[in-house]
Image (cartoon, rainbow, N blue to C red; front, side, top):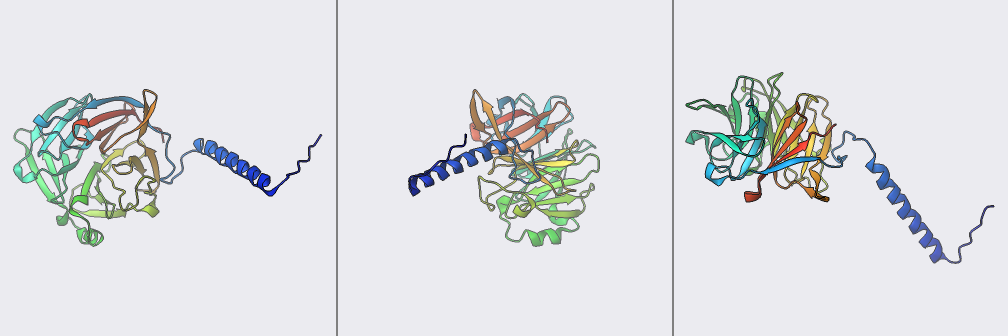
Length: 310
């Protein structure tokens, strides 16, 4: 039997439609939770699975302002640098500092990204001087400085960087070990990705990491959205770009120009938490682990997560 409902007033009709709208909105949220990722930055994952976390700040070793992060060839260690002192550090995957290599004074102290190469050298970014340091961690240390301005193709980059603030310069670096290409990320205003030749003598491509390219955050405005670290994924042939301000990872394929986003959120002791002040990122794809290094004074941490599937 079908019941014919008669509404007694316009107010009752209005209340009924409000209920229907709320039900539709709730249904849309439930459905969205099960949608697969798309190639847009706002299609975020549900969060990360925490494996462990460790305190890392060590002022006595000049590691009070952790910055870049990368896997090293030494078993159980990552490469890292700090804004505090011009040193290249081996950081244990358990957060304990290993050897530190003091760089010559000419390297300055504003060190940011770090990335190893097949020949055993380690590339380190110097933000203020806008240069790449090629470090051979030997005794004594061998170091070569390559200013970005000295590279072929830099005038084109310079045109894009007009007005770029001094503290928004080169921030992240990564190497594709198969091709030898080097990727340098400009932090912001504007966000740029420079693709360098393996010989570090030419800028072969400049890619704006703009909003219309999929770099979008619900947390901060476009002008505030930054990039703070890079790492290369062999399995997906993509860059994993961590952002401090938006607290997310952008997974960017430089060939297809597609972008996906991973929220830097996780559950601990039944509570939803966020990774604050992420500065470095590294992938151990053999073990399926993702490392995030934070710069948060005494609260600086090395987070270890399960590597999320794309």
